[in-house]
Length: 180
Length: 391
Image 1 (spheres, rainbow over the protein chains, first blue to last red):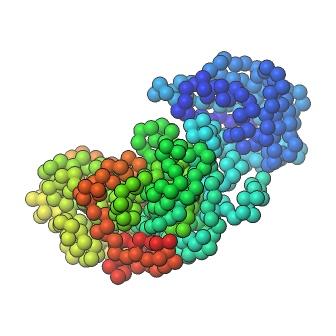
Image 2: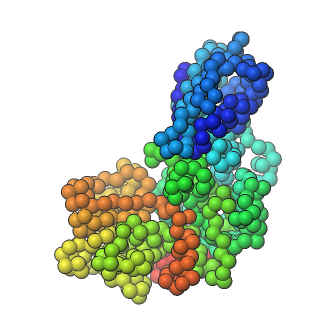
């Protein structure tokens, strides 16, 4: 499965590139990622969480990069869901902003993991990546993922409607946290 | 706390709900001192804006005292104890839309941007108490409210103006003003305003402040027309006269130079069969708008004139008079108000006595009587023009 998405962020390309290149930042806006940890100069360990599939972790390596312009990576070893990605950072015509163009490729397997991944992406798989990039924009432009009473859990707030009512959370809800 | 909530179509209910909490670092919590019912709240209650849920706190016109700020709030701009009016669109202040003063199109403030994008092609800003399509933010018809990006939107009131004098800076005064500003008013202009509700009244006052030669108020409620007439505007009752003929009479056959639609999606019409056509289509949801006011504005406007739309539309419209619009060189301008742009300059106009926002207030009720307030406002009972609620 191939997914593409793009957004424009009102920050210069070197800054957007630097944020992405620090791979530990990816889980702040990519909903399915739990943690990314650098294990070397170009290698890293990625962990995804439910509902993407529990306890899915894999190694990845950067296969190509041009500072300020492009990063390409792919999973290595026996990843449950072999995947690869490329992101381009292109200065926008306004002279201030950066266009971010992302291409992700997933090699979805059979079996339980494949089913979980298919269920996660649902009928509109591109929507997940669109929403990831919206959050990237929020984080870079405003400092954090924006929350509302209806969608209080940041990147965990995947359902847009119906969601919880637009009224403040009770202490119990706040203590319990997001569903999944 | 107590809060007025949506309880299904045609129903609001004041309930006990949890107090608001800081969710983002640039949030503030307000103790609300005054809040109001807006005409656009009626579109939510009437069920014409999708994505409302049982329990949603209503209200996007409110002001009060800051009682808590998040760690990211710029203390040079907002502190605990400040008295503020809150603009209804939530804006981050950092995206390209905000940088271009297009605050109601903020690219970051709507966590449910995906639904808005499906409806409108591109997302729109978050709005307090105005459906999940605009973010699922709790509204201000409550004792307390959470205000995101609190160091961007809220306007500090440092003078001794009353709540009633400044409360409408949150929405309807800037909205009416933007409606007039979009008309690019010249000293010789006759400006006609469809709708003499609160926004229409402020559009009329703004048109005069911006130098219009004559301002015409079109409505069917005698008390609303009287209110406009008392403020110096010329009333036209569409239940009694044919609007187009009357407008031609009042303008020597030219038609108004500038026309403002302050009605939006739930217009009523003097002509029963046209009204029925749209009502049926809207009822079966094959058309989301009843756009008589806009159609009439376009057909009435003089060639080369401007039609400015501040009444709310939510979806798709039938029988848009594209021929009149195109062949007669009309300019159509519109937008949810970019309130942040107008708050300071309008506060100055209020301080200088050029605009008196209090003239439209007919009812002041305790928050617990919000359902009654909705009822009289919607059904135009007891000469209701504007309801202010006191939590």
